[in-house]
Length: 94
Image 1 (spheres, one colour):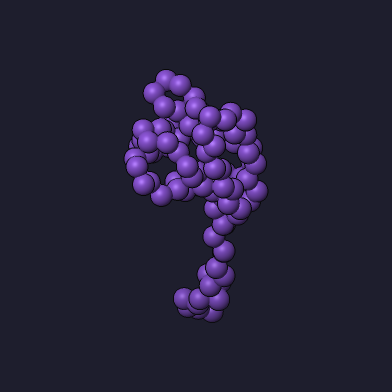
Image 2 (tube, rainbow, N blue to C red):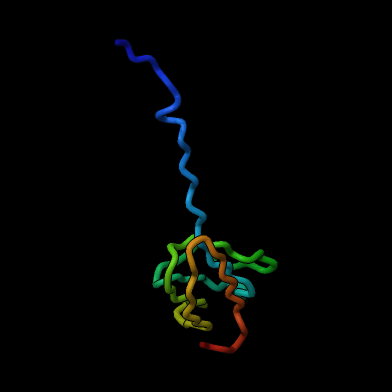
């Protein structure tokens, strides 16, 4: 009996899990996005597009910092493979 290379055993493809993400829009100039206490990227500049941040599914705390001050905070939940939009509302904390 001989074995030959056959793609039948290895041809089953596993679908990649859809990433969950938080999309942050409306961050003021010079602000930095924090997710669960970790800085996500560089400070925002004028005309920045929304930031798309991949996260694990579950509860998350989104904070917008300007210098040492938290100018916006929101607790949110993102389901598996979902996108959650967080719009920074100037002067409001949730």
